[in-house]
Image (tube, rainbow, N blue to C red; front, side, top):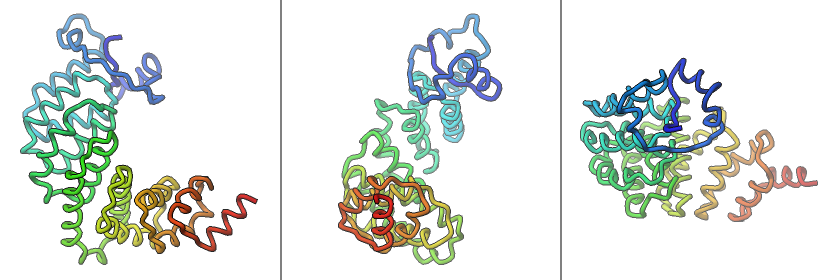
Length: 289
């Protein structure tokens, strides 16, 4: 089998049943031999689709078009190194016309498709820093996730990211009271990812965690549906850098009885911070009795 790819619409349904059911079980394999498809010859409908996608990327003439093609390649889970190399080279060509959202997203596409050896993480640092003041909290959270997933982040770069977040907060903090519930929810998720990324590389930035706590505390006080995974990520992020935010933990403790988190995970993280809460202690004692 020369290539591993997943096509769109009718091709996606066809391939799921007939050719590549393993793809949908998180099997990730890569090929980088493009000659068969790009060169032509007798091709099946699926190979024609991939060939056309190659040509679309090769002939791409704008940053926005590249962004859409990159997203399309990710959405169809095309694990083909040749096409991702094309996307990477086009990224360098069009980076000056890409918006912050598009830059952060394209880099994140490489992370999501599990390509670890690409130099895009290293080469895009200067690209990001040249316009970092234009990035939103969401854009910066996506950058954090992408760079820490494969441990591609260096301390200096992450400090620059933290500074950008702090500066953006200073500009926007006066508007927090006017944010809608939906706005708070989006910012909440962004900051959970941000502190999770800094926590993963054990980079303790007190000011950054203080800012994150503003949005996290606000969200926890609202009727926002939060998954157990997010609760655990918050606790683990603070525990991993040894920051005990009792007000946030108290709010989480009130919701622990209604969410599914194993006692071992919960106890291990809270013990590290020497955090105790009467409601939480009684709940864990009951569960373990």
